[in-house]
Amino acid sequence: MRNVTSTSRNAEKFLPKLLDRLGKAKAKAVAHIKPGDDQEVVLSRFKKIEDELQRMEDLKLLPRVTLWEHTLFSQFTVLERLVDKLFLGDDESNPFNSLEAITDQIKASISLVQLPSYPERSLEFTHRSQPESSLTAVKKLSKELSQKGLEKGIYESRAMANLRRSYEHLEGTELRLCFLSFSIFPEESVIKKRPLIYWWIGEGFITATQDKTAEEVGEEIFGKLMKQGLIQPHGNVNLSTSCTLHPWIRCMLIGLARDALLFHFDSDWPWMPSCQVSLCRRACLVFDQNQTSPGEEDLFTVFNVNSNYLSFKREWLSKLKKVVVLQLGRWQSSPMHHIEVDDEGLFLKGIGAQHYLSFKYLSLRGISGITRIPSCIFNIISLEILDLRACHNLETLPSDISSLRKLTHLDISECYLLEGMPKGIGKLSSLQVLKGFLIANLINTPSRLGDLAKLKKLRRLSIYIGNEAVMHDNEFETLKEISSLRRLKISWAVVSPESRGKIAHQSLDFSFPPDLEKLDLQGIPLKEVPPWLNPRQLTNIKKLYIRGGELCSLDHAGEETVTDCKWRVEILRLKYLSNMKIELTEVEVQFPHLLYLEKVKCHEIEKDKYEKNIFWSKSQGQKLSKA
Image (cartoon, rainbow, N blue to C red; front, side, top):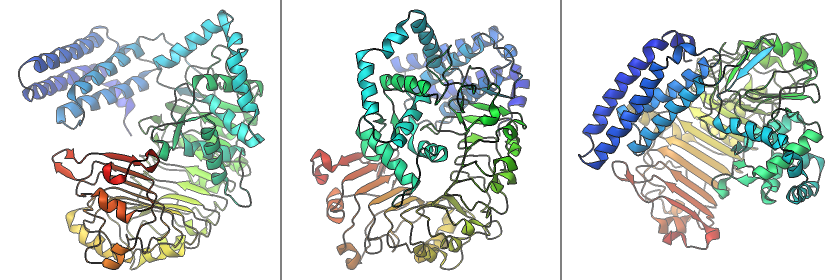
């Protein structure tokens, strides 16, 4: 974890070092630019950056930092990385854009420290977040609308009445509750689907049916809201895993959620939810608002909307005797969103026996600074969803997690410092989703792939093969025994050339369950296509993703029986495969059922230059070979 306290003690030395590093970056940048107008532009932009930094030093802003010191130095960490990227030549984008980004970051840091100071907080817990100009503008607009009496006019307008009718036409309470949950997200947010569905499950907005799991019900609701235009897909429509909300729909939802007492919206800031719990049982951690009021023991949900720094008193969690959902981690689509704790997550030890009957969903996704998960978490027998994804400082889990018999979702993916898997995973009989199963050395991983064959409800699995992985003979053959498995992702760590022969040998025994529908391969360290990657073995695959790695082709040389068999894949995504040259005419023949193709940075023609990227959809009516 970055040592914030140490950084703040050396604040006086930070700017001179940064100015010195910037000078070296300028010299290197200018040396690689031809004399002329471009050089003048670069020099002028560097001058602007140096002037802004000098202004910070002259104003002696750093010694004035009190409440916002963590946020400021988080800003400076970003600034330092931007300068390092420019200096080391790691930035693939236009250097002019880097200079603009550095200038913007400095201005943000200056404006941050010049904000009026806020009173110190002495309540049960504090939360701080980077103040954003957009949020400040929203607050100002809200006050102006209220003062002018325009807010009531907006809610009573004909347009708003039409939007309310679209809400009233939604069938079923669960669909309406799920839709109202969007009211708490800031304007223009990009909302990731998976944490949203996890929240709905934890709250009890959605439950499993006889034919569908709770997650499948959530997927269906998300699809209905998108089909009706109430939420909008973000990015590629064919692969929509995130969404946004139109400002007018958000405005309507705020009014409805406030009237239903689903959330409390602060009277001074009616456009954002509140931590106040006197009127409802859901508290939101939001920047620049008062803390929770008496009544914490009745809280049902605590949701982190946009707090970047969590600093809880350890006793606080013990008061939440009825809590069902603790969404403290990241819900945002962007992995760049930063959340940090300053005590290595020791506040989690406040969870005790009083939570064992009701607590269903805990998210610490994307929180840095947490090095270990206390064993008390793994004693919550009622827990159904545990999301630890992208806790980059997480090193160890409790030695045994077999007590979580009701757990349906466990996500420990992107926790790259984890040394191994605890024992007891094979006893989690309710598990439907397991992400980040680590294959490491035999000592640190008592749970092996063979244990997963006991999980009769497991539908989604992602496996990470570490660079020190040691596998039993024929270990991957056991995958075919997980008959319920529908989606599988296998990721390889970066491996040395000496290890590739061993991996090539180990990969020969891969075998998959017959009803697998999606296969995602990331960083595959093989140049020749492995024998198991063929349509004869993967007969029901609908989605095939291959991202990164050494593969040169999908063709099985000299194996006509494999080549003659056609894939049933409908969505094919090939990304960052610098060795792979793809002939679209061959793809069209081998993938006759294809509905969507994505080809990004494949076949490196020369350094940093690739064949043309392709985003093809059959719905556009164009033949693939002419894309």
